[in-house]
Amino acid sequence: MSSSPSKTAAPKIGVCPGSFDPIHNGHVDIIDRCCPLFDEVVVAVLRNTSKEPLFSIDERVEILREVLAGHPRCRVESFSGLLVDFMREIGARTIVRGLRAVSDFESEFQMALMNRRLDPRVETVFLTPKEEYSYLSSRLTKEVFRLGGNLEGLVPAAVLERLHQRLVRV
Ligand code: PNS
Image (cartoon, rainbow, N blue to C red; front, side, top):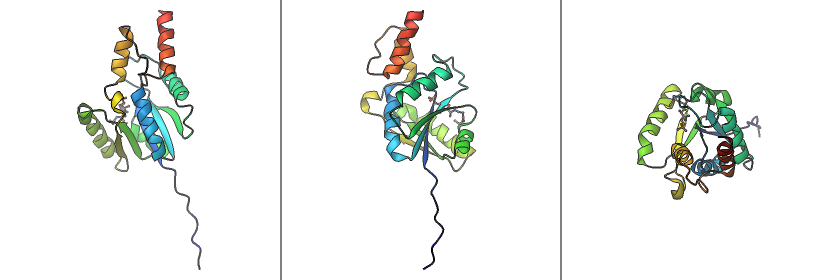
């Protein structure tokens, strides 16, 4: 019987891209759901966002690393430029995005098709968060913070802590 050379399959890498300014519990829920589906999960934080961020890129990466410290197969990286170029660099082909409601669909659909157009090997998959987080967004958490509302239970402790530090500083 002839033995065929053993081939090691490339690890399946899922990429969760986003601005994460700040990460909220809906993001954490999607990343949690993503982990069992891939060998490795890369949380990719966009560097060159056009919006004025609340947290710098270094702070966002630091917060994410702290929040995801208990996720052994998950790593946090930042990227600039096209997402598909970053994916090519790390050997990933699957983008994972959270889909909260129908209102997310149009822009997510556009991004998925554009990414596929830019690199036909790239697929986008959508996961739905827990219902209790389906209304959460980074934009709303920032607004609530700025207006003095309570974000307990909506963002990880690492975010709350830094938000409180900001309040002490101003
Ligand atoms: O958390 P966000 O702001 O909804 O994330 C958007 C993100 C970072 C996934 C998207 O803006 C992105 O991938 N930007 C990188 C630039 C890019 O590749 N653009 C073309 C494809 S949409």
